[in-house]
Length: 456
Image 1: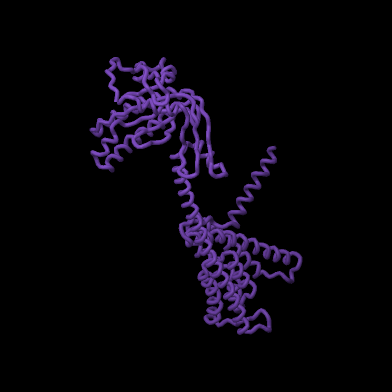
Image 2: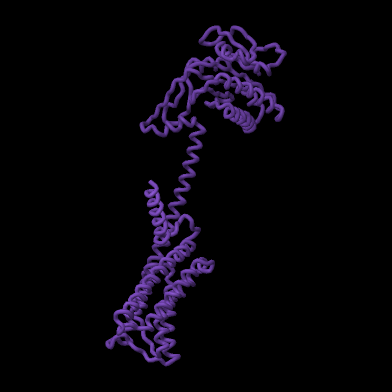
């Protein structure tokens, strides 16, 4: 088992190293194409220096082989030149790891280009001749164009520096020109290197344009994807503001349209709250101010619903509807809906003190079975149906200002922990007479004095 894990770690290490050598910098991490190109050049320089060093070492081994087994083919000047280049490449490799190398990869590019192309020229100059390197130059120019195909002016400068040295030393030191083969002429040599440089620079220029276009396209795609994610998150937030989280998740998984979601809950608490006299107040103050006041009140109620882990169902004008025990069932559903009602009363009193208003509220509560779900396709909401819902609505509409009216079933479920006042039988539309109670508070917090009731 340990040996298998060791092999896995080694394979991951090798894969990461190969990716760092042969991969390209992430476009998403670059602020602009110039920044990405700078990182690309630095990364490919590290690869290029390593490959050049390995290739020169193979030629050095070839010279050492000649020294041992073919002395007549051994050339000391070649060996010294190769070793000089190898030392220079090793120095360049180390320089790339410094702050200068990271910041100025183009400078390292030129130094290493001239190190490889001018080393045989310096050797020839010391021997008193000028000899064009028909192998080292093309191999260097094509290799650089393949490994670092960006920033073609830099390639042109590297090539120009090579030819300036070649022609400059001829003029300054009056060196004799030696062609590699008898049939080669100056015209042929000019055309040979002209087309090599032209093709190399053209390929770099075309790749650079292609890379810039790809960078811009991928950045545009990333930006569009990010905007899509933002819009998707906004849509998700809007959906979660309309529907409970479990229902929203189920709705997204339903493929058929129109979608229907319906669940039966045996134990649920339903609360209706209505601001007394709000309709009459709408004719006395500007509509914008009225809506703002209502929004401030309901926003506070929303915070209370979150506090008690309840589900706000909807608002209808100046009425507020909230439910406990769904969509996730809870054991203390009756206590939670009662605490919500008491906090709503307290919150409305605080709001009146802060704003100088005199809002009053009727609250009705019923507990029992309900059906909850989502129907339709457009403007759907999570809604409730059932006798419990109707009775809770009647408890509110037949209630008393600044009181919480509950059913006898609710009273029986809460009477051990909460204080109530029996209101007695009231006539409920569609149900006939029903015994109703007024929730006064928790027993240890219940007021000692009960005021005279006035029916609204």
